[in-house]
Amino acid sequence: RDPTATLIQHPTLVKVNAELLLTVARGDLSPRSRGLPDAHWAQVCQLLGMLGCAPAESLAEHVDAASKQALAGAMAAVLAKGAEHAQFRSTGKLGAMELEMLDSVTPWTKDDTFVSLLLGKSPSALGNVIGDLA
Image (cartoon, rainbow, N blue to C red; front, side, top):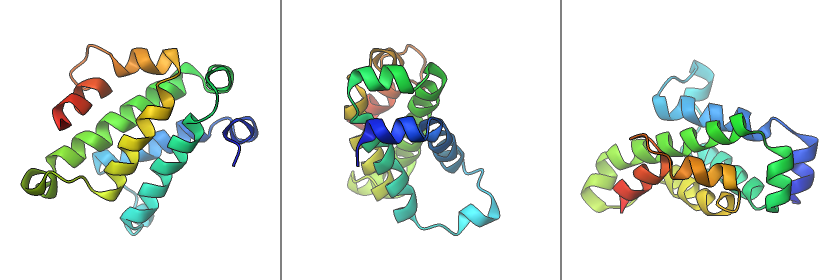
């Protein structure tokens, strides 16, 4: 798929999916969403990573700052939740959703707005959460 074409056709795709993942990470799921397997959420993370593969100019033009903020927050929340999971604490291995989310960070780092969010000073900033995983 062409990430730029997808961003043009679906301008709210990043924000909607980021907000959905943030809800998942917080555990505030609707009854319908609770039944979805982890593989589904991993695919949502993978989609966000694919969209981040668009050229920097496309990300700047087609993804607004609020969507990038939502994405950075969702990434931080999903990874923080994964770091708190018993599996990670005992084995050091993240689950499928968390691994896909971690892989999705790199494509977005060519975007200056996203990088400023990555390096934010708040304790829940994405960069701090990634540092905690290391």
